[in-house]
Image 1 (cartoon, rainbow, N blue to C red):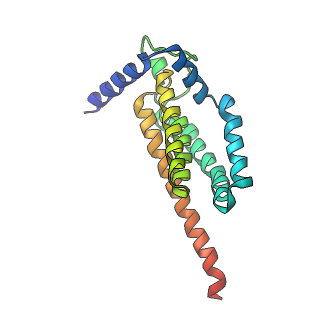
Image 2: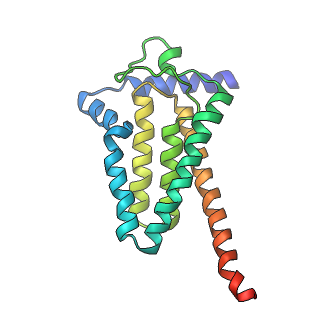
Length: 187
């Protein structure tokens, strides 16, 4: 069973990684690089604080512990625990157009962080915001496979972990705010 799943993971990786077009290369390099997208993300975050009302400020402030949690969990705990080598290092003939990273592969921290943020947005906003948030998380996660840096299971596992972290954080937030709101009435 495990061998079949690994074979499927490798097959899907090779299929996605081999689908290549120069314009798509540029898009994938852009969306995956926080140095390139960071200013846009910072502007969205500031916009939430400044013009987002109570809900926007709540989301902006919850993003801080959420990304701190997900990034540390994926980069420093889970990657060490699973100790999986990246496909660009483990497999022959991988197209790694931005070079191979010689750090660990599972889970994809990009997927963990982006799906955590998308889930947070989806829990506080309806409609097009949800589609945009999950669409961006999906494109960023796909880029990691396309660029030869992660297996599909690294991305799917990261999406599940990120979603779970966001759900847990929002659950704790709601529990704490309900207790805080109820406390003055109880006295």
